Image 1 (cartoon, chains in turn blue, green):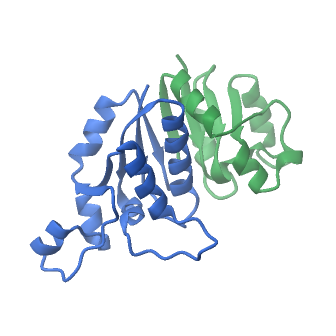
Image 2 (image 1 turned 90 degrees about the vertical axis):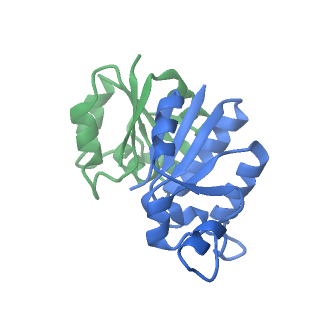
Length: 130
Length: 101
């Protein structure tokens, strides 16, 4: 089965970023395919590599990056939501005259079309967030 | 096949549960996750609506979220607990998933 996952909430807010991660991980471990995880609205804050949670806490961003790397997951951050919240990759930084980028490994920035495609291509689309 | 409805907000905070119950067709599956698991607690002002829902729907609660909140001993009878694996199974078994946020 092919799952699509949408994350609308930032890390360390309520619990949606955690549930989305645990669901995605469990689905992959059961042998399902996860077509894409799409981060939208405050969910884009899952994709900044500059977070530094306390050492005894889970690192939500790193956890996504590692899962992405391990399974070749497509972790997509919505460009318009990202621009508003200061989530930037090298290209976006250059295009908008910013002095740095902060996108986390395994994440990429793209548009809403990626969400539509995930809805079309996936057998089930699950939304986590506020 | 039935729809899986997930509810992730406490019924004492938002009306996600109410919206879910008024929309879900008979035979649907409902899963409480995150603060949504407070819907599954005995003796609250929403427990009668959950007990009524148990006659029409398959009702589950996400076990890690129940235990994290210390609610394991206070659950309404008839609500089944699942872990994340079980959540994935429910999502796969049902024909679509509707998230009530």
